[in-house]
Length: 540
Image: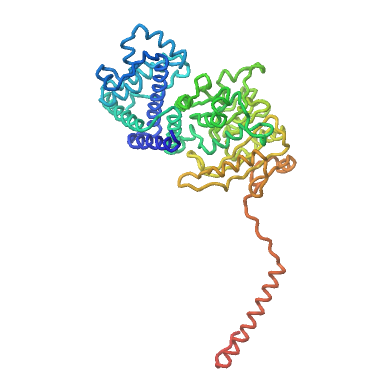
């Protein structure tokens, strides 16, 4: 499928969503729509694998013949004729594709039930979700549909109303998809497009699950370049990458896309919001990331609830080649005495209760490899706020861990209009200065959000990669100057975008004014001569 067709698929599905959600909140409808898109993907993938597994025994029958037999899929027909072989077949499928979907729960059957307005659609769909979650081999599917409430009043007050609404929604999605050749890449891109569109309609809530693609592109480019010598280009392989506030997983997928499907050993993500956590797992699978190639954990990052990250043996503690994150800005948290002794914060101190920005940063930095790169999006306040934040910032600077500070334009996010910055951190960095990039003036103004165009993104990445200096855009600043500024990293102190006023030559201006004065006096004298000849009063 071409890029244009993928975009058209996304737009078609968004138009269906916009038309069908009615008075339903965009966030609620998003969860239903994306779950159905995911079921379509799982079904297509499973049927293709089943056809390969069964070979010549797979009953490749036309749809009309299947309907006459009372079944909606070839696999259903095979099940009917080979009941005794089903357990062994499903065992093989669990081993090869890591999950099983019984024929009645496949998307083709669900859409047929929707087409004929079958009153059993809702109950079949619910049973199908339960089956996929609980009977599949892969733990990746546990609780995957837990937030999809098919009994919600938002779908209808009675079972019949809810069933009818689902028939309509599923029927329209099926019609929209049938126009396109929906391979897994296309469905993954459509899923990503829809997440972006729903984010646009979700206002402040969007910050919980979505990082705009242009910003994702900048972060992923930075962390995939060589950590010690970015100018040498992209690394050939990353063993591991972590996003500890991963939302729907788009930032992690951006890193994977840049490295290629075999360029990363394993993707790790953590997400506190259960609905968003499920979105992230679906998003990984829809983009062809195998369940063995990623791990998304549901839990609180600040409390470090992930057992894997709580390992106390230094030899076994996980460390990551790349850490990326777009955590919630100035999140209120509860720093406790116990957290003060936490290995992540002990050497730096705790971020204030009013803003956990540095707590998130220190969490990710703790798990970074010695030659790794971390890129994190934060509000500008972390650059200059005092108190505990100033102490943390000062220690990070004195220890040589802050590599680059990038200021971005305002109004890039759906969730907030404030300008943000990207901090690039390294445990071992070669330059003894800090690179400041003031990209705040480089954007295209949009109706709702400002946009970073490819040329703006490329300029930021190139400036970071080659540590370039450019007047009114970027500058390398030594620690001596930063120390003179009390370790304040406010970008405008080091790279001002203000236009320099033209220097005024006072002597030249004075001479010009004298000459002009003489010209005025001469003109008045001539004018008074004319007035005198006419017998009129003279000018003073």
